[in-house]
Length: 277
Image 1 (cartoon, rainbow, N blue to C red):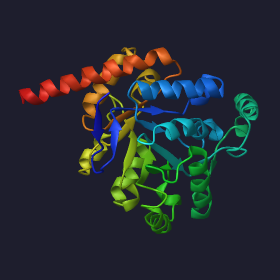
Image 2 (image 1 turned 120 degrees about the vertical axis):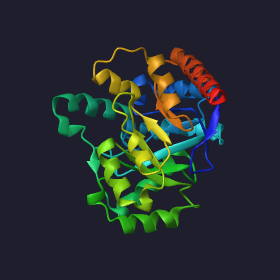
Image 3 (image 1 turned 180 degrees about the horizontal axis):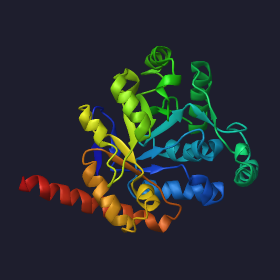
């Protein structure tokens, strides 16, 4: 899979990033680790995670891969935490998630925008990932009105170059608008939802910002009843985010090869388009 340098950074990433939000549902820790290793073997060099994904297990699952491939990059997040903490056993997480289907409060995340909590959270994430520094540290669906933006900025700037290589936000379309309007340096990097029909990330261009990392294309289409094949959706997603990276995920190793094929086809189409123009 071809790599690109993310716009506005010096960070090389694969055209598709592997998202770990649903990784816990793959099965055992070995099965999850095997899937991640296979993703790397198929050309995924950037991995997206968060403390809330798998209640800490997604970060731990990435540790062996990141140790074996130090050149791989990882993004993790801050602000949304797991109910019961990120150190629960796999069995406890299964029970909590199952119970949460009946009583949602049991599996509902904790949201905390205090910098004091964030300091500890960063230390814990780095320990679970087995890294001294995270390549990309993102505020996880932050609400600008609930943040002490100046305090967060001071802290992240102190961490920059030490425990954090780059920082920014990971937001939905509604929250994105507020951050773009404020022009806060907290949004130095933006990872945001996008779709082929709603085109939420067009807000970036309106503020002279490039697309960097986008996600949500297939899930958005399915929620709206669109039955277009996944390959077609993702091909168009890569053409839309032509110089950045699109987050995808799968629970099945046999599907990984299809992402390589999709990325190659999309980039070939972009090259043809550019040469024609």
